[in-house]
Length: 220
Image 1: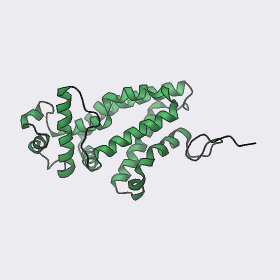
Image 2 (image 1 turned 90 degrees about the vertical axis):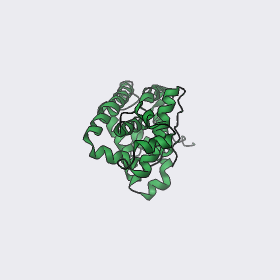
Image 3 (image 1 turned 60 degrees about the vertical axis):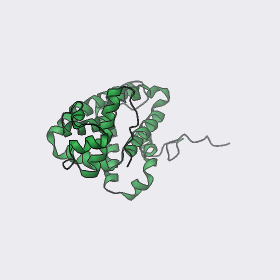
Image 4 (image 1 turned 120 degrees about the horizontal axis):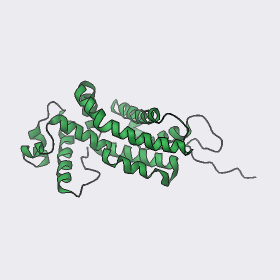
């Protein structure tokens, strides 16, 4: 499992925070949330125990920090701001490819821990929903609403559409964690498949290949 941070911060404080989160990812994945200790995380991070408390109040705060980093909450607005550059279909493919690459780079062992704790810890779940999910959905709804108003996407309820998209990604992640062999073997193909379903649906359309690409016009 890799614990490399995909975006190394230039700010020393942010870099130290990322260093601690990398260590927490490794320790939580190996030992589970409840068996892991702050001391073990500090040892793996190469810092004093007290240093961690300068950035995170407790283990739950570390877990929320991991969830926030995996969600890329701070950079999500910038991701959606680039959407008009290549059109809705191209944006969706690139966006999903990036999100799935982030999940793969982090390593799947940690998601067993994160999802388990979210399901059993109501306070953690409420804080995650308020601090991470709510602002992320607000950004997605704004993008989808604009794309729908401009005619690039079908006019649907942006709030429900955003959650349906998130649910599809979360669902395939859950199936992967459950050991689905097809997803294990063909994980890298998923972004294109999900993007094609989201943009073009499952029913055949004139001028589109099964992959959702525009077919060449027939020769006369």
